[in-house]
Length: 305
Image 1: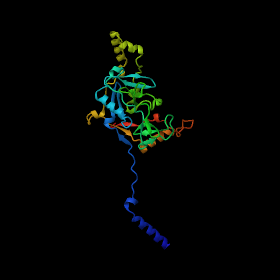
Image 2: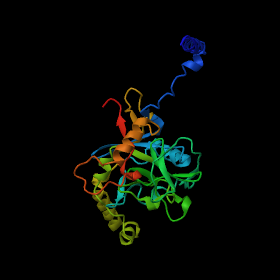
Image 3: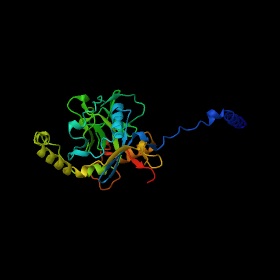
Image 4: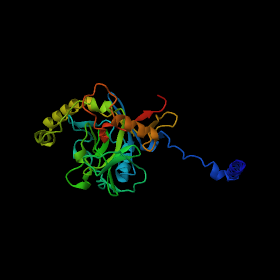
């Protein structure tokens, strides 16, 4: 018995002599639940029903982000329209007619890039369109080996173009519904983080027909002028009154936004809560315990609200 007590006392003494750096190793610091949106990546788009806040993602498509910053700096979209709003498809904005964009050269095609797995948070279940789906900095992304691309989920910001890959220059679009078949075919370089309801409220409008284009730009100038006025009246409620970067607004006046950190425990818990509905008494069929990546946008919030 005395020997046992002696050994116990020896063990306690040994523990007390262990260096503090080993005996009291701190736990890994938890990832913060929210991260701020940089002002140089925050676009504020004013439409008739309110403000649409868009976060840009230069890591995914640096040339596209640089082009949009240039366009915003010159006020390119001010007074222009969402001239193509197709139910269940996309809302497209810019200058509807090519002659309004001749000064802008096409940007490189940046639909996907080679990126390491660092900073990628897996969704946690299989995806229909990508070998692996997940998030990077709050953006929904697909992965195939080291190749990664942003997805055409509702609220994504993409660049419209002609048939050839490197023909995008100024025309932007926002999917109204998941358009995942566009993934890797069109460059996505941002997403709406607040005000998506204002995009959904835009009146639906079809693009010009060939006959209308001929009337507008043909030799009959009175008819062309009449057609132009008709087109503007048709898009009256789709006007972009202003579009600018938050970084151009004085710091004391600019709005600030935060996005949930997709490396945080809070995001993991939110995903789990949307994956398992087994506790809902009204459900008859067993839940599939899967999550569609476009059905759960990463939350964002305006600071101070």
